[in-house]
Amino acid sequence: MLGCYDFIGHYDWSFEWFRKKGGEALAKRYWVEAIPQSQPHNIAALIQTEGFEGMNKHWGGGRLNEEGGTFFTRGEDHFRMDVHECATLGFLKRNKLKFYHDYCHHCAEWVNPVVESAGFILYAEHDHQGHCFFEFRRKDDSAPPLPPEQMGARDVRNMPDWNRDAIHRFVKTRETGQD
Image (cartoon, rainbow, N blue to C red; front, side):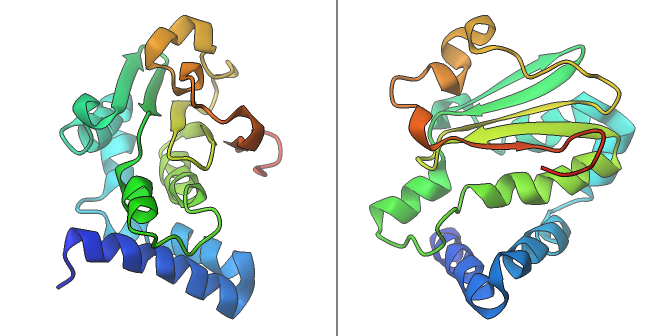
């Protein structure tokens, strides 16, 4: 059995291996098909039955915490995570184990089909430096993500080291299903 730290390095190495064997499409297929299956419980069912509270149970319920640099915001119409310091990317960088060029992107890719199947849409941004946000809304909610000025210091986009020059946005459009 792999320990947590061995797993993180192997995970990143696997993304690059898939990319070399079959391009970005194969890496994305792995993220979308395999990662949700490795979750400790059926996250889609949890979100489908409990909505934003199910998201809070999965992500906010002790898995990540504010001491670790992740802040959770739950409103009537959204659930949001602002990651100020990604523990796994930080580990890869500290240990010079970075293999895949866009490690951060796998999170949005595996999370999106899970929440989409439960009737939600995902907005996400990351800056390739271990900073990101995920905002979930119901599919029929056309509101954009909360603006940084509304979120204050919790919003990762208000951090001084948020790399505005390297933003990667992930939004599945309601009309086409494309990002």
